[in-house]
Image (cartoon, rainbow, N blue to C red; front, side, top):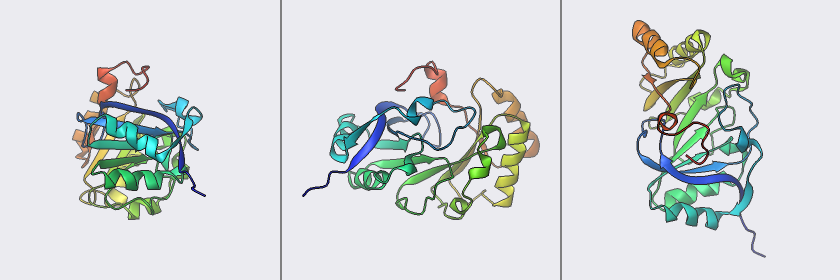
Length: 218
């Protein structure tokens, strides 16, 4: 009997990468369904439950149809699904540059070495900071990236402490501080970073400045 690999997918779409060091590049997004966090500023709550089961081969065919070499596996929380691992392996086998965005509370121990993990460390303003799996910090590799979504000064101070305490500067490809879109003004965050000399990038969500944030599939 042949066992089919089924993965619950929320959406697959082609857009401009809005975050990370790959910002501005065309990218195929594979958004998986389900998340066990409820961040206060979450912009994709529809990914909590919406979606349907798809075979791995069908997902790969849809990705290939876009003719794009950069692919991000995201969610929801993609590491909730066992099928994410054969998916990442298969994308790598097809020569794709693979990014994984994960919330930091699920172990990254099985993430393939060639995948760029973008570890989203939750700050207090998210309401989910206590769920962080700090062992994921120890597993960061030089090509990985770390992201903090900043809602206010308390979040900024928290991120600054994590960066210093875990000596993230020089350990990863980039550290990003991202103001909550429509909440904390980017200028305010930039002034804090400049004043303190924090070794991080102020990151805006580029896609939200190109398209209406309410638009899905971009």
